[in-house]
Length: 523
Figure (tube, helix red, strand yellow):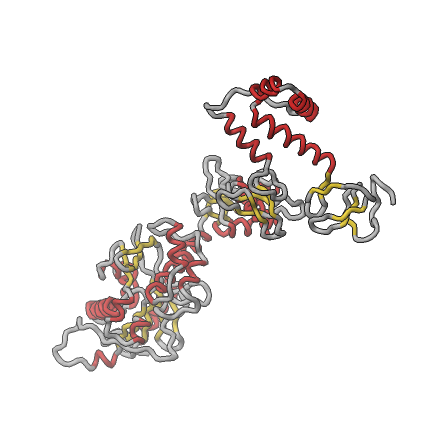
């Protein structure tokens, strides 16, 4: 075995021992392979995309790795550098050409020694600063790409290669720092292998199993941009399928996947049981970043949901009001309890909305949205029209005693309202007052009107007596709750509003003969 081949085998063996199988792959028995180089990012590093006159920025901690595909010629390292292809989705063709030329310069500076590890170190630690990228990576816009003279295949793969034959074919006197030419990858060549992204996704520009908007929408509560979470979620969900915006979405998805991978291998102290757990057994609340073990957080949420304290399904820390996402709650408590949580949360939300009432029918009870300034409501489920004030069948705009009483109460609280004596609350007191007013002299009537108020005396007393009579002499239909008066005949009644037949004595619905035992009447 020649000295070059021995050095090649030793170098590949060292690379295999240093890097993980996800980072270094060798195609045996040949002396070629590929290395995925993860670039080290400074703190508060951001990726940005220019949209019109604005610049949208997102803070990230990880970028997809650069792919260095190499092939070692027989006279490497003594005479020739490795033939290589440098591929990256988030760098431009010009930037890749600059890096490629510098890699060749690094080999020539070594004086004929192995160089692959030095290349990896440079790409990992110095590539960004060499390209004058410090704290902000601005992705190339589609308008910029359309002005580029590269072929579509070059733009999609953004790969730069340096071959042995091209090195040997240089004209005499040419400089060694000349940028290498661009090589087009073969159609069957996989220039963008898996980079630990979610399934069916790729980081090659313009190649993706699913659209960037779909990928970004699958992580709505986990990204950490410079803008607010709400603005970020709306922005990602509206991303059109353009090349630059799809690339941005893929970078954010990859960043979040790597953060989750790091979180899963980190140890955390649970704030409830004070036991140290691996991140794979913990859950972090995105609103406050507090971390708890899943058993403690699951038990806490289950107790709150079972007791109906939906608003208490939040961070266990006493001074924190952050809440877990619905997906986290479902994962903690299971499908059955989550259905209860979802239903009670919706009901609690509707209860706090001033323009929502519930259908008064016992068989319905669905939420109804009120129209502004209207006292009538129509249930969209059962079609029941009812009065908002008294929750009874709608009776017109000016015929609601509950509404009048409410308005009179408001008027009585005003500074301009006269001081009247309260009208009796009992039926006997109302009947005695009305009898006194109806049979009294003109002077007596005037005295009562000055004491109780003429309008109050005439409207309130008569309406209350009428309502008391109706309540005493009528019953509600068991189907539509319409008030029915019995004017004679047997106890088998037919509702004049909906046609339902029912028993007057026990209000049981009837289909033919009385098919249930009646507690008040026997047939």
